[in-house]
Structures are given as C-alpha cells and as structure tokens.
Length: 297
Image (cartoon, rainbow, N blue to C red):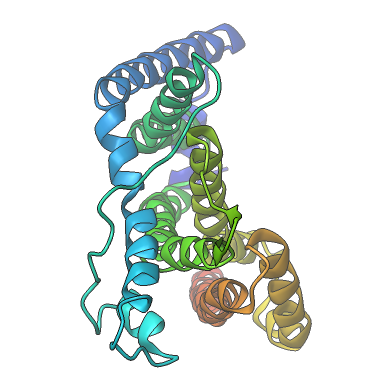
C-alpha cells in the first residue's frame, strides 16, 4: 500500500509526547522573551507613545476651537471633510490637559500601555512560533493555505486601528467636548479626562475595530473547514447586516456616525469574505476533479 507524499511527510514528523512538550516549552520561552523585550522597549518610550495617542484628542479639540472662531463659517460637513483629510486640521489648542487622581495612576497607565504595545509589536514573533509548532501536523497544501492568513490578520487589524485613530477617535472626542457647559454664567462643566480612562477608551476601540476587521480571516478559515459555504453566507446576508449594526451599536460610542463608521466597513468585509469562500470552494472543486481524474487512470 502506497502512502501519499503529504501523509508520508506527516508520518515522518511524528514525535513522542515528551518531544512535543519540550518543543512547546522552547517556543513558549521564545514568546515570553519576545514579550519581555517588547515590554521594556515600549515602557522606555511609553511617554512618547502616550503623546502619540493624544493626537486624536488634539484634533478633536482643534475642531471644537475652530468652530468658536468669530466670523468663520463651518458647514455641517466640515468635520467629516477634515477627518477624511480633504480639509486641513485646525490648530486651535494651546494646552491639552489630562489629569490623574492617584499618585501612581500614570505609572500603571504606562505599564498597561507598554503591555499593549508589546503584544502589538511582537505579534509576528508570536504568530510565527505558533505556526512553527502546528506546521508539522499539517499537509503541505494546508501549510500554504495557512500562511496568507498570518499576513492578512495583522494587515486587517492595522486597517481597523487606522480607522479608529484617524477618524473615530477625533470624532468621539469632538462630540464629547461639545457636551461641555462653559458659557452659562457661574455654571461650568468641563471635560478633564483621566489618563487611565483615555487609555482605556483608545485600547477598547482599537481592539474592537481590529478584531471586527478579522471577519474575512474567520469566515475564510470556516470556509476551508467546510463549516460555512458561499450559499450560506449569501442567504444570510440580511441577517448578517442586522447583526453587524447591532454589534457596532454596542461597541461604539452612542452616536450614529460612530456606529456607521464601523458597520459599513464590516459589511464590505463581509462581501469580501463571500468572494474568499467562493474562491476556496472553486479551488477545492478543481482539486477534487483532478483527484478523480487521477483515480480513473
């Protein structure tokens, strides 16, 4: 009885349980060292990273300050045009102020920021170690199919994070600053965000958008496993759109523009996912036909 080349390769890669555990330990050590190094690097520049994350706050405050300039007219679409880059960002903020109310609050905020940054910058190392651990148990065609997802996943996460940084956060902060009461005589209600609360807002939105942008990767993997099909995705499109808008309403701040800013890209990615699953099914059918032809010879 002849063994297929892929099966022979997997048989050759078999190892005792202790060898698998030893390999797992080595790869976990590599991941831990990478995370520690990434944490130390990010913590060393945590102040600069935090200032970088304050840029959307400065943009939102600048938009609000520009609206109060006498004699300058601002149309209803000026905010959207500014956020999308068609109009220059106004610079009307002389001093951007955040506060912390506990002695070590900002220190622990920088620790959390360094941990978050370490996971982001070491993701290629973590993903590669995971791939190298599971690759011996995969067929050659499965390994070739798995590699594109390792590339697509961080790219899609970066696109989601860019949407948050350049569009969502400035609008959310502009909307929040608009709720202040500063011209009502003796009454004054001003926004003084805590450094920890601002970091929580930024990281929550970054993770929410980044993970939602993984939809094509998840559906394509489910398509490869035969769990979802093109017909199933097309028939369930209307329900998926309703679910996307419901999820966007939960994940984004309570305003329609934020919800639409997340929901529309996800709906577009859902359509892309349908094409990806259709491509997977086409290639699978082609391979099955070729196998049948070989079997008849």
